Image (cartoon, rainbow, N blue to C red; front, side, top):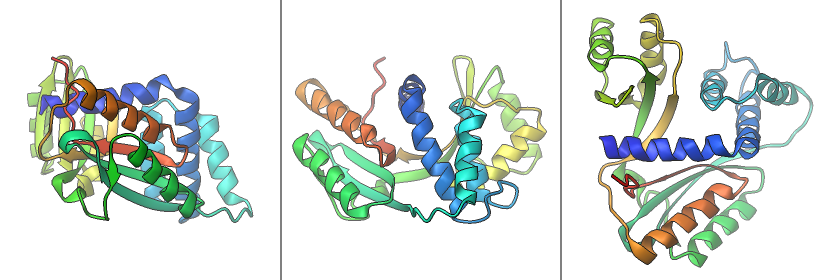
Length: 240
């Protein structure tokens, strides 16, 4: 499981390193979530979740508040959630989650990015069945055995709890995200390095040489697209 955690670390490090783009993407996601229901996280679970994620990436309060206030206005800009699936070099598989106000533009851009960088876009469901939607929590300074015991005592089911250096990682069902988070908070754990819904591959591949170079370029360009919120893949990026 450590190798999957290495990929999550790498992805978070990228977002943390590009604050302005990360803030902009979260601003759109918060706006869309607020527009999809009440612009109040207490009554809108989707909005609450996005705000909780945003806080783990240190998105400033004024960015969050501005997106919610914008959603309360009379603007009619509508965003649609889309998922694209495709293949990169040598057996690599990629899932792209987008949030867009222009479906044709986004579909064309994503398809072109795949095609120009050694990949090809597949049909819906082409690779997602080989990934597991997973609630991921990462905490510093906690003991994995104590966390596991606390979750068991709270009658909360999780897939796995394990230690990686000074971090404790919890994997659970995606539908149990809020249940797991509430149980952890009731244990006195209120600071999360990661509190995410992720798509974890059931099996990973290792790329080398030109294949790895092409793959990394493909992922970089997909993530750089303003309409793309998250990119998942099955390539083992653990260099150890």
